[in-house]
Image (cartoon, rainbow, N blue to C red; front, side):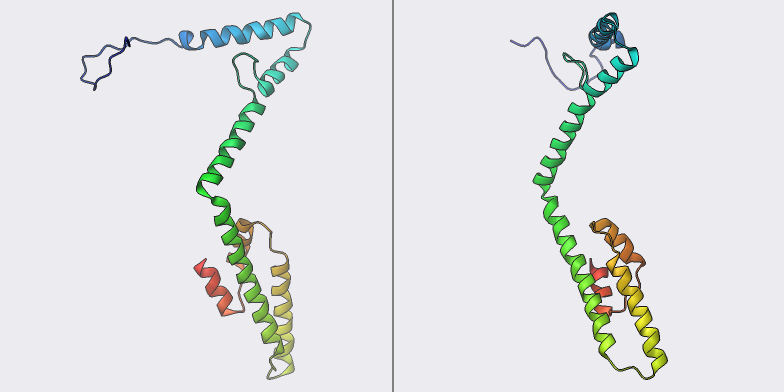
Length: 165
């Protein structure tokens, strides 16, 4: 049988004040006890505090390593639950399609005859600069998108695909 009765708040309930010492008292006592034990054993205060920050207290406190492991597990579960990997893979494939479309557009235009030699030289120079920029795109999708936003497309189909993305 439970000693607690739950009901909607109507203003007649009485809340007992709580004290931070009550909440943190046991943890603080354990922590100070552990630090004192290590200091009495001849350890350096900086080493003791560093170890506590990194690994936590064995009985109560969670260390940074444990916290990082929990964060990694939570991230993995979220990725699995929301299947974000497949979304990122789709974006990566679409970006590759944009880049490949731009490359083939540049190659196609290189094969076309130019009205005069000056225009041919100007286009070849511009095409090699654009190809260099495409070669230097980052591997990650976010970096690739950021760079392509600044890129001046030669092939309209590639620009259209990028805008759709």
